[in-house]
Length: 93
Image 1 (cartoon, rainbow, N blue to C red):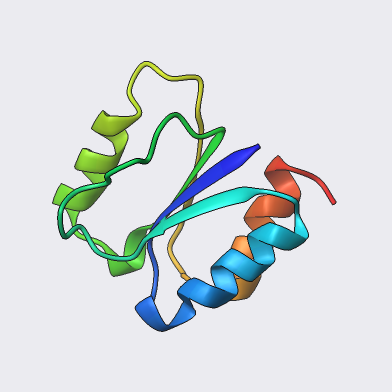
Image 2: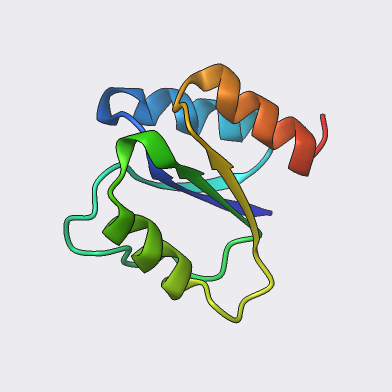
């Protein structure tokens, strides 16, 4: 199963990745929009940390996965505990 995380803090990227590995997920993390979302593919779960991203970035991320069978989770906070809660809800564990 794969997850794409958009937004969040750049300094937390390694911690997001480690948490996803605990859930046995392949994670791609895009804290910034620089260059778009290259190689995002068709993830099973898209996590949007809405507090740390612009409306343009939200719309772009949603347009990239439009038509795919991807579940979308939004969180206002970009903390590790918020990500853990999302992964528990959608993946189990």
